[in-house]
Length: 357
Length: 196
Image (cartoon, rainbow over all chains, first blue to last red; front, side, top):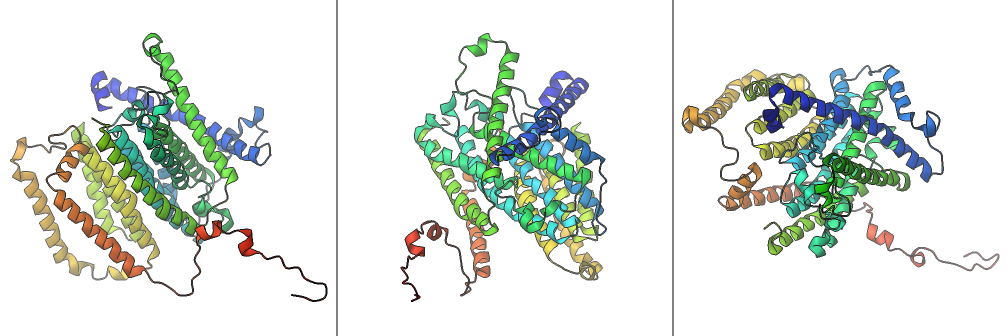
């Protein structure tokens, strides 16, 4: 980004970057409105209900109606709450969720900040997400939110470890932490995507399980069912969100869904080939207009993200909630050793087969 | 541009560090501490050490500070009482502060004053590569020793907290899933009026 600013001058470059960020945020928010609806529709379809179908055609405007409702309600702050922290928590959650999107490449060259340590940046920002929940739970000055936030802290810290190791396997295969380079390494068609890794044939036995582990850990990291223990309504009412209403609640929900979509984007980038289609383009790259190719790239990226989100949604509808000790057992006793072994195997493969030259 | 950013971040780090000890509420103290960690990471980005910055955020802000917050929230310590003897520690704290300051000053000025700049990645393309090259060649032994010390600390913590209580029923998931109908139920043909 600083190179970009130097290229285009201090004023024009800065304005362009700000415009890029603004555009990205608007597109993301509008897409999120429909993704929220998709979540509810999938859930409803599994239960053979219709789901939201009143506002607009097929209920398409439902999220916007909800948005208006949240904005117009009164913000209630509990008497014993720690006011500053109480209001800071949802703002922090949403801000962090947006900030993480800066490094996600959606098409060749279409990324706000193409930094060298992109994967680590995403990992760092998503590990900060836990603060919004802890602060919200503590500042509410109430038992259930506090219990919910404690659960979420333990849960997110536990699953971050296995997510980290899974990411390391991909980094080892590519030899770079830059997200654009990770995507480019999977440009040779569906068999080179890291979820399958057929170009390093025996590694599919390692990489596909890693993809599955990443998916399950992402569910736990974003507090989605079956790991939604921080807000388990049968035990904790609504967990850390009990005391929140109106706009602060909206911000929490927004941040949560942004994180879910971010995890989908991360899965797409690391394992499903990012913006590349399942068949390599070959000569078309030179003959077709670049804008058309970029739009096709965005379409592929969005399609894969929607597929990941569909899996998130259908898991929510089909799988019963885990008990807390089962959750911890899965994270520490199964995923951690498995992913650690995978790091050993992949690094051994990379060294002895000379993958990175 | 970079100078402005440096001063803004430096002021935030300093102010947050002061608030860590000045805040009345211990949870607020930890939150200020997190802010100062995070801003230090931003300072590291500013000198080009992006890998170190991200590690600082992942390890300290993302994991260690969460545990701090966890403990401070759970403990019901009377911090007003703890702060009673606050001033009596002042000479000791001043001594430690002075030592830190002297160390940082020595590092800053030992290189040769004005012309020396901190090099984030000497002899390599990126920060991560430079650290890896040094850590796994020159300081391999120290690195391994540090790892073993951490392992020992971990085992120690587990040994201290592990206790086997005799009458606790534990779930064995493998046993549960391998259970068949024959293991659990029995069909008894009861003759009428006899009972089992």
